[in-house]
Image (cartoon, rainbow, N blue to C red; front, side, top):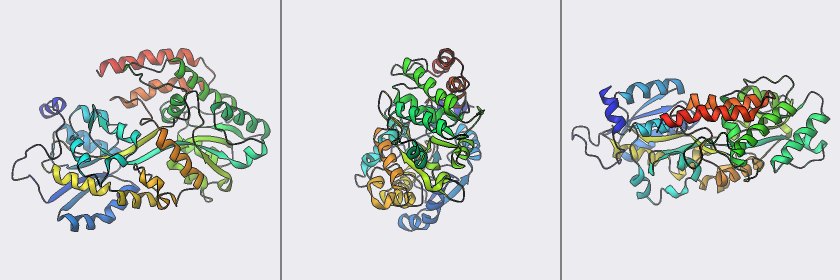
Length: 422
């Protein structure tokens, strides 16, 4: 407990700046903790190159998401120096880690090597890996929300691909009316699960979970319009007898089995809709940017994972060498070609970087990387509790209830969390 209390009050330390005991400083053994992911698979295959290039030996620990969280919870709370490089989720635990002083300050490091190119990283993910003006992580995997649509059903309705929320609504209405048994629109409906996908509607309508003054924004006029719109699409034009506990597998199954014409979802899941083995509509699926609301097309553009340096590590200079290598332009391009969306702008403008993506999907992602918002949920320490609170008006709207009243109630509850975290 004493170690945890000390870390909670400690300042972020520069990667190369804090002295360490001579016995451990600059150790040739680098301890790297990563999550199970396709990104990790590519890095593992390239580790011999890094070791040969640097003369360092990498000790790699790899865990599933839940195991990884458990490891961090125990070890970081105890102030361990047995982790040097750590793969973490900026939107899920980043604020907690930064507040508790678990993440080293990388601000000087990211600006030193101009060829490596910090300015090449997309602004949304960079914001999510920055805490109080200090860079605490380098984004490695991104995700954006896009519109999935059925080309054949839009053609049948004589409609163009929706570019605005009004056009999305009209298209959903027409598709449902013309195709018995087919929903006009489908999306996540679960109280917590839907929050991330609802967020792009919220931003496009001009709202956010937290306003510019640090107060709850979920009862603003823009938020209330977004809740009513998202929930109304599903209530009026969604699947019959729709459940209110769907996450992406259930929503994707409805779309890929030909039971819905329009679907907003993360780009990273697109192969579920385009793989003929998984999808009955693989040959008719198209992709487009999020339709624009009053404030334009504002999809989330978030880093689902990032690399950071343990502030308690005594091998921080070498830890940065690993991050610099793992997030280089060439490595990011290599990993993106394996199907993992990168956080660098350059890989999206390189033909090789988008060669494995459907052309319209790559174009939609390009819009989101330029205009995207760097979070898809409330940026707080108590993320699960907050998602349940701000997600409740979504469920109320889907079931035809008074989402304005639900938003008011949610705002009061969410504000209590914000006040407690000050």
